[in-house]
Every structure is written in structure tokens, then in C-alpha cells.
Length: 213
Image (cartoon, rainbow, N blue to C red; front, side, top):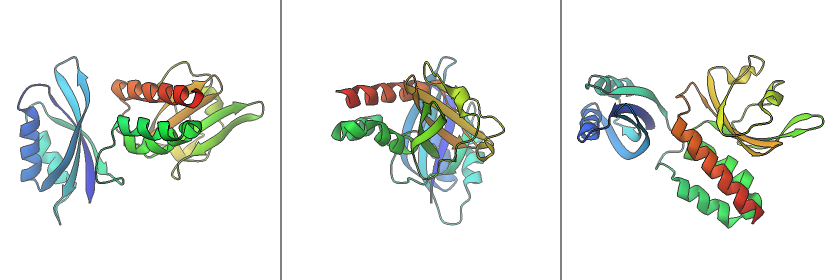
């Protein structure tokens, strides 16, 4: 079973090697590593895709990593996509293959590219907010999404209690134009990082440009 581990570690040579050794000793087999963010305080955040040996629980990997000086596991969960981490360039390649469907293609790819659980495209109309396109795991709309409009830039979104399906979710969105936004969310975390917001803004801007070309 593949798992995705998000870990904060010192941004110095050798840190990743120590983490990789700890994961291996705890029964994890690393398939891929992606640097998510370099932080100003001398730390980095990495996503590690790994397979667990039969009978080994992910808690053992978490404990092994957390015992290292300066290392903290921020989040671990099963990674349904499996196989590999999805690069932004692959998203762009798909967008360029079908420019007129760029918005919907971006929605479909966000959960894999950002390791989120769902994504949707929302439009504001005279009668309220409607869901234009969504992935299969996306929740139904509640009564509070009108508060997300208009969006000026990529950002984290507040989830009101009325949208009960999104309890304990972290949600981010990005405007496509004044009356359309894309939204993606994780159930239970981890938090949406500033670097992820920047990526989301970049990919959305590319989708807008490609669709209009």
C-alpha cells in the first residue's frame, strides 16, 4: 500500500539521507521524493511517496522520523494515486492537448498534482453558485460558497459549519475570472502551504492563457 509522508527537516546536506535511512529501517521503501517548500528559518518540507512492508504500520515510520533531531512528520496518509508523484509540467502538457477543456482538465488533475482529495470549478450566477465541473469525491455545494466570490488571488478558504461534508478539511481556491473559481481540498490536512498556493496560481493562470489562445 502506498503512503504519502510530508516531513519537515533541516535544510542542510545529509538531512534527507538521515530521513531516508530511518524510513528504511522502519520498514518503508521510498518510491519518490519531492521538495515542497524551502522555508526561511533553515528548514524544508518534503513529500515522500513510500511503500510499507507487509505487516508494518505507518506509525513506525512516523516514530522513526520524529526521533531524528530537527525532523517532524507533518502528515501521513494512504496515497490513492500511487506509483509516482505528479509534476506540474505534466499538468501543463495535458492542458495544451485540449485547450478548450483546460479548466476542467485542471480540476481533474489537481488532486493528483497537489495530493488533495477533491477539486471543483464553481461559477457565480444570478441565481447563486453552481458547480460547473468536479472530481468524483467532491462534496455537494452548501449555502456558504457565495462568500468565496469574488477572489482576487490564490488563497486558503474558510469553510463554514453549514458545509458539513467539509469538516476538518483544508481548502484553497484560485480565480479563473471574476465569476469563476477553482477549489481543491484535503480531508484532515496537511495545511495548504504558501508554495502550494503559488503553484496553484501559476497553473490556473496557464490554464486561462491556454484556453484563450
